[in-house]
Every structure is written in structure tokens, then in C-alpha cells.
Amino acid sequence: MQCGWSLLGPLQWIRYVNKQVKVKAGKDEEHRGWLLTVDPVSASLVLVNFQDQEVGGGRASVQVVMGHAVQEVQVLQEADQETMERLQSSFLPPRSRPLSPEQLRQRRAGVRRWLEQNRVPVQEDGEELLVAGVLTITAPYGPEDCCSSNQIILDRVQRLIQSQAAGPPNHSAGLPADQPIQRLIQSHTAPPADQSEGSSCD
Image 1: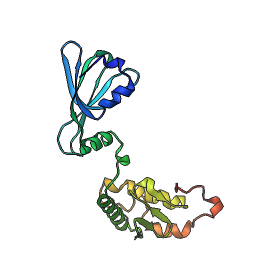
Image 2: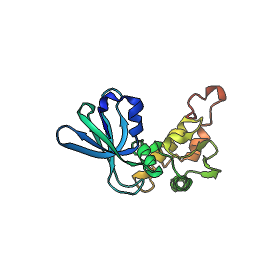
Image 3: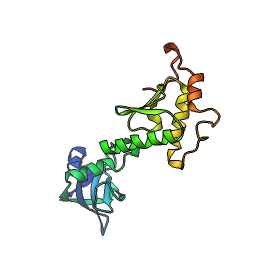
Image 4: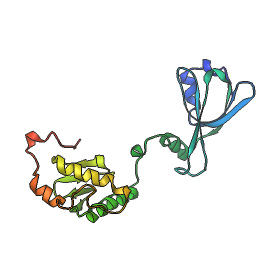
């Protein structure tokens, strides 16, 4: 139990982070939740409550309790490993969340199947996808994971992957029907090494 919350400072506040707390604020207000962080300037608390008990499922609600109104903070429960991981990952962009090996395998297979349905020559090379020998797609196999020194092929394949969730195969979505990717590859050879600034490789 702790009174004088705003006077404690960051070194004391950190001891409450990732713990379930009960906060008394104002005259008759009481708030409960997992303490995600404390604003170092205002001493405001960011409380998180999960709407279900399954890690990774459902949604999280967020409440901010203004530091100047806090009268008392009491620790109710320590977070277990699963809860801590959920707190740390709940507010990351989806792209930033690590995928399991099985999720990566399913994603790789889905992208390969989508490209094949759109008549794009693709094969697996270990954990990478190789498109017609001129473009590679690395995990987690999104448009931004494509790498090629040929900007035209790169753009077409990225557009195809972006359209993957839009619906059934559409041969005109990124590759004109009268100009399949094989013809594009033949007519747009990769530029020399000193002209490869168009590459999307990092």
C-alpha cells in the first residue's frame, strides 16, 4: 500500500509495473488493473484490463488515472510470465509481434500458393521464397520483405502480395494478362551492380 504517489518518483514507480493494482483516486473512486507504465512527468498510471483469461485472445481495455488524483496504490497480484508477455505485446503493431515457426511456415505456404495461382513462377529455397530467380521473399513474407534489384518485378510482386487478402486470384491485379511476369523478367533484366539503387533489399 502506498500513499503520496506523485512524490515517489520513477525508481519507486517501476516496482509497481507489471503488477495488478488497486488505485484509490478522488473522493470515492477506485480503479483496478495491470499497471503497464507510469508517466514520468505527471505520475499518471496506465492500467490495462483483459476481457478474457486467454493469453493472446480477446481485447485489452486501457484506463489512465491522473497522477495528481491518486491517493493510494495497492498491489493485488504479481504477473506471471504469460501475463507479462501479453502486457508487453498487446500494444505493439501486428507486424512487430514475433510469429511462431508454424505460423511462418503457414504464411510462406500461403504466399507461395497465391503467387502460383497468379501464374508467378516461385519455389522455396530454405526459409525463403525465390521468384523466377530474380526476387526473394524472406520471413514473414509480406510486401516489405521482397528483395530484388529489378524495380519493375519488385513492384508487381509486392502488389500481388498486398492483394492476397482481397479475394480470389486476379490475374490483372498486379500482372497484366497480356504481360505475364515471365515476359517482364525477360524484358527487364536486372541492372548492373552500380545501378542497383532501386533495390528494396535492406
